[in-house]
Image 1 (tube, rainbow, N blue to C red):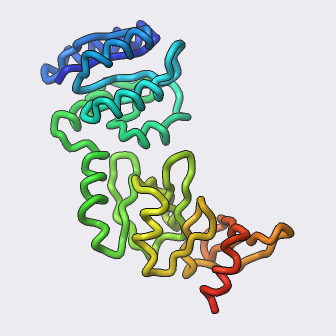
Image 2 (cartoon, helix red, strand yellow):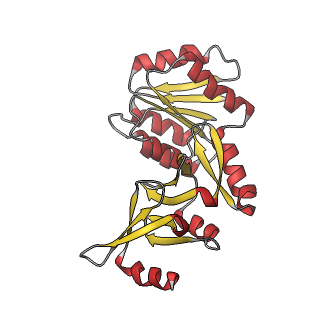
Length: 243
């Protein structure tokens, strides 16, 4: 598997290079501490696996990932960064992993082993969510490397935030890999209602609604403290739903 590294920290490149030497399945094709040079190389020389820093001078790693993914969808991207602020964006780009510096040899090898087996968490997640789970009264949630099957009756609401969907249940919050429109279509036969462009709520879990002065409503749930918004143009439809 041909590997390319783009990271503005030379010591980070050196560390990763030494670890890759211990895995004969991976061969380092090129490494760059200049994001512009690395991006230019990838445009002409696609690889199998790209280790990519995010916060770099010149070109941001997210931008590189967006462009390369559109040109070469088969390239697997693993973000390597000291910041966790970009995790949602990274997985929205179908990154195979997100390594936070400083990471250990064990953590890197866990990532590489998944790639060799061709069964990364994201790949399996896409397969299950795309073909099997949606014939059932449940959806898939993603929690680190675990795929969680969530019954629709356990969902309080699904929230669209920063390009991703978060599935809120009593037992935790899980990430989805579909759009809010998809979940709305999937769950429309149940008690789910689109209260706002960013919220899909399970009305069976609703406890009460409180009007605001701007003709919107706050929706409260029975078992969790969260409060979500019912937009003005949805209030009338919501009243009709209950009538």
